Length: 67
Image 1: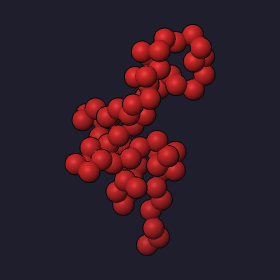
Image 2: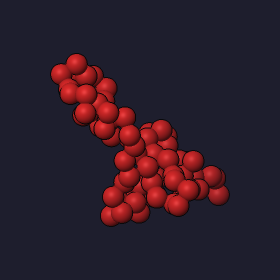
Image 3: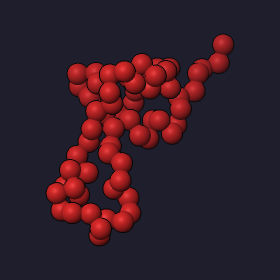
């Protein structure tokens, strides 16, 4: 049987933490940055966690575990 393929779009967007949670970046940090305040830009720099209800669905995109 051939190897299963990892979803490459998901592999570029998600990473796993040391405790096994799935990490993602926040949206809204690509353009129109001049219209946003300093506090909002500072918060957008930080990573966020995937909600536990979505972790199983994202895990299905990685047949051999997250990279």
